[in-house]
Image 1 (spheres, one colour):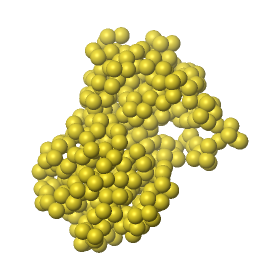
Image 2 (image 1 turned 90 degrees about the vertical axis):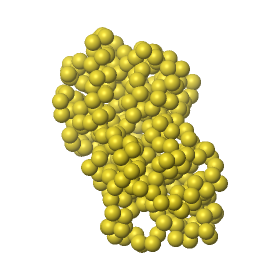
Image 3 (image 1 turned 90 degrees about the horizontal axis):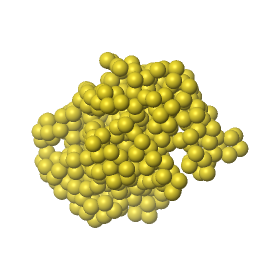
Image 4 (image 1 turned 45 degrees about the vertical axis):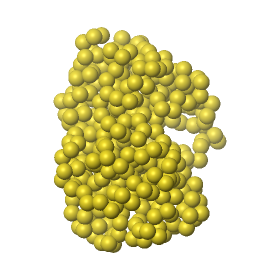
Length: 383
C-alpha cells in the first residue's frame, strides 16, 4: 500500500522534537508499506517574518526511517491562517500526484488536513484525517473553524488519539461510522523502569532530591504557572523537592516571572529540549512525572511515564483518564494549584512499584502502526 502523508506535525530541522507520535508511527509503518511524508513549511515575506521564524527553514534534513519532502508554501502572519489550507493544497498537489498513493493520511485537521482532503478529491484518493487534540480542542477563528468542519465532513476516515477526542470530532461533523480512536504508544526500548540512582548520576542530580518532572512545551496552558505555585506551596514542607521543566521556551518569560514572584528560582529548573533517549533517562531519575494541562488529546508524556514505571500527577482532561487512574498516580482538576500541590505531596510520600506501573499499560508504536494500517486499508476498500 502506498501512503502519502500530508502533515506539518512532523520533525523539522528547526524543531526536531515536534510531531513525535506521527513520526514514530510512520517509521514503523514504513517497514511494510510505501510511505512518503509531504510536510508543508510556512514561508513568510522577509519583512513580515514572525520573530519565532528567524532562520529560513531547512528542506534537506530528514529524521530518518521514512521518506519525507519538505515543501514551502507562501503565507502571511495572522491573516494567512484562513487561507493556509488552500496554499498547502496548491503546493503539494503535484508532488502527491507524482507519488500515486493508494490513500492519503494526515495528522492535524487544519491546515494540512483541509489540504489533504482537497488533494484527495482532485486525485480521487481516499483521505484519513488524524486529530492530535489541540487542533479540535481549540478551533481558532470563525474561518479556520469552518475549514476544520469541512475537512471533517469530507474525510473518508477519521482517527483521533483518544475516545474523548473522537466524540468531539463527531460533534463537529465527522462520520461516527468512520471515526476511530487510536491511542498513542511509546518506544519500550527507551521508556522502561531504570535504576533511579544510576539515572541521577548520569544527569548530575543529587541522590537525595525529590524530583518532579514535566516534559513538553513551556506553554502556560499546560498548567505550568500552577506547577510553579505548587512548588512554592511545598517548598517549606519538602525542601529537597526540585521541579524540572523540559521543553521549548514558548512562554518562558511568563514562567520566570512566576518563579521570581513565588521565590522558587532555585527550586524550578528549565531544561532545554532533548532527545527521546535522554527523556527516558530523566524519567528514570524522576520520583513523579506531572502534566497539569488545561486540555489534552493523548499526551505521549503520560504513556511514556507509565511505561517507565513512574507515577503521574495529571489533570482529569481530554484523553488523560483513558491512560491512567489513581492506581498509577493522581488525577486532579485543571487550573487548581492547591490540588496539584496536594497530589504531588501524596505521591512523593507514597511507595510505588515501578515494574507494576510499567506492566499496567504496555503499548508500543508497533501496536499503533498496526491499527493505523487497518484503518487505512478499510478506507481504501470503502473507496
